[in-house]
Image (cartoon, rainbow, N blue to C red; front, side, top):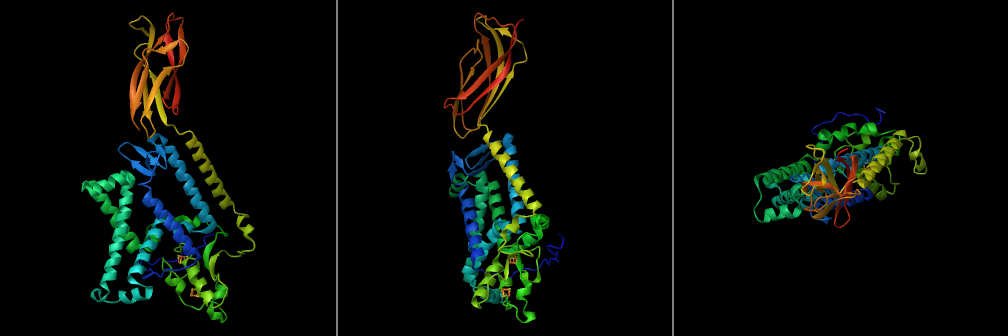
Length: 446
Ligand code: SF4
Ligand code: SF4
């Protein structure tokens, strides 16, 4: 296992100075996935479901709005199941095909790809950019250079805006900017995220993957001998044997976002983005050779025996079962998600007393929390035969509000109770959607 991904010395200065954008099937998939992720990210603070944005971390009211659900600190278990299901799903994908997440969906890769695309559109091909990089700054084409940095800045600001909007909502943050009402805290976070995005996606790029990301460090433990990794078919490609298919065009190196040469063997820095596969396939088509000189593969892999991918893979099945279990637990937890939280307690001062009408009474305190996104009206009643509230009780609560109310329960005349009884108190919203019945004790003289 330890030999599966050889650990090579990582050179902190190694990088691809000017990435060439590849074209091909894998890059199409990368663009589709990246485009969908960016669209969801940008729209999440704006699109509303059940009266709240798709994602809104309302710290002031201690609420988390997530695709139509409103979660409270006591719903934390749901987030734990979400995190566990996501982690095991990631491990499953890693066991199937290495760092597929890193290459296709990780925000660092997605944003870096977007920045490289801007670079190519403004400053031209890799060749042009490389040539210019060696010139003194004043001899470079300044307009394309400045346009690139301006567009990078705009993307960085849009990213920062969206991050902050997750805490403020898109509409309120937008209004604050338009009306020049940003406070110093918001200005700080907007600046912080914008600078971070600009530096990460514009300058650091693969250095983040190589030196900062913890996932790169431990992902190799999830692989087994049948994990599909981007691999160079050395037997077929090696030109030194005279009849190799590799023409040493170096395109696979030029398109590599982490600046490695996959022909040197599997390397942990490889993020399995498939760019080298697309670049090489393109060359193979041009020289009338079969594609697949570089491909997702493992030793002994055959496209005609895909069933083999599922056999004798304890780790894969283990992760898959854990993903299903965590996903099942999440669904179960969601099915018990409460929209109304009620706590009932008995007044401890006295066991019982007689009210002004001479009726036997007990005192109670009820705490009601409206966990929905709408204002609700609740009525509170006793559903125990012979026991009723001294006065009808109805409470209006705004979305997310809670209130504590005291009330008395009296025994109907003539009261024949003696000793202790179960008292059932039902709280129900007027739209009948939320209800909860709690049990307490009612004391009478023996
Ligand atoms: S792209 Fe293919 S042909 Fe060109 S150097 Fe890489 S492996 Fe060889
Ligand atoms: S070696 Fe190929 S798959 Fe790996 S990071 Fe470079 S381009 Fe992507």
